[in-house]
Amino acid sequence: MELVSLQQWETAAGEYERLPYVRRVGGVRLPERWEPLLAGTGAVLLESARGGRYTYFIPRPKPLAWPELSRPAGTGPGVLAALRAFLKKHRAPRWPGLPPFTGGLVGALSYDLAREIENLPARAEDDLGLPPAVLSVADEVLVFDRETGTAYAVVVAESPVVDSASGHLRERFEVARERCAALVKDFQTACEERASERAAALPSAVSETAGGDSSGPPVAAPAPAMRTLSLDRAAYTAAVRRVQAYIGAGDTYQVNLSLRETRPLTAHPAAVYDALRRINPSPYMAYVPAGEWTLVCGSPELLVKSVNGCVEARPIAGTRPRGACGDSDAALRGELLAHPKERAEHLMLVDLIRNDLGRVCRYGSVRVRDYMVAEGYSHVQHIVSHVVGELAPERDEVDVVASAFPGGTITGAPKVRTMQIIEELEPVRRGFYTGSVGWFGYNGDFELNIVIRTLLAGRGQAHVQAGAGVVADSVPEREFEESLNKARALWAALEEATC
Image (cartoon, rainbow, N blue to C red; front, side, top):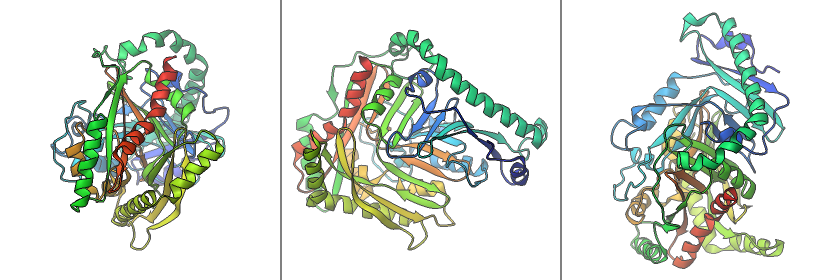
């Protein structure tokens, strides 16, 4: 069933540079396994596996080659300026009755992109040399609505106002129909056939790509130690004490102090993704190839999104492990929700995010709903709130990102001074950890997660970074164990994918 008509195209063609064609399709369902569709294909997946609604599969993304994406953040004209210019030029109409994302950009923003926004020192070692962002054009998208069980196929065409030489609008509309049918057929064929094709290739996939999802030449992988930490227990404890000294001096109230754990990569990232969605299904999962690297993301947390002018954030702060049985799980949940430290930390970060949104929303429109609700995942449970506001008319999507990025729940408060402390105490740059993965629509809407519960695969290694919120009365050993506990689902997924 067509959800966009030729008449709509005719009305919009003179004003917009991009025209989406959207069709509701039958007989297309979420696959039980994504690995056959992801491994070695370059495809991008943004999935709501639990607690969310929409999943977006982009089988043939077109990576952008902006110079801003290949140089370190903060060393020249910025990614955010290039992003704004691209989105301003390539606009599409927002039509009712369509999924939120109907074409645009998909990809990942590094935590270090914050150097374009704030004045931060450069003290931590840039040992992985990751780019400030990885972005691709998504002009063909399959959308799955978990709430209704509906699937949509989206293709995007250029308006004749851009290129009048390629035929009349009606001809373009017919081409879009054909592309849409081919998109659906290719997906159905891949679901049926590609599993057997990949079965023979996967045993060598890890050694051939060393963790990246590239189809290029083999990458020489180093021989990693069995397990290394960027901060061991003693170093993490010392860093916590240093944070508490800063708190005592009035520099900060709370710091999210993280450590990175590295192990050998023993399975293809696509197999790890499938294992992760079984072990720890989350609302903001993602699989994003990034050259020689691949992000396998199981995030529970939204950074910020804006749909038709409604801006939303869902801060997560406060963590306990899951219980061994229903009674112990409920007891841990009750203790979490009643704990004065956890409640104070959560309130502080909700206030920080209210302030972030207040800079780009209409005065008086920012409010909190669903305040301090417990959400459980496979290995941990969290306190979550929901902050909403109405985008100010003089602001755009890049203004919202610049105001909210990176998320206060994974830095601390006050944000800028706390990020400076993080740069001092964490020995290596965070890279994509605590950055964002998501989409920017041609229609002006966007949605970004916070990159936590994520495995970065590449060069024969698997990196998982996690942290804990350190406050004045934190117990260093407990914060260290919390950081390791948050990473367990990722290591369990790697182990399952290896078997």
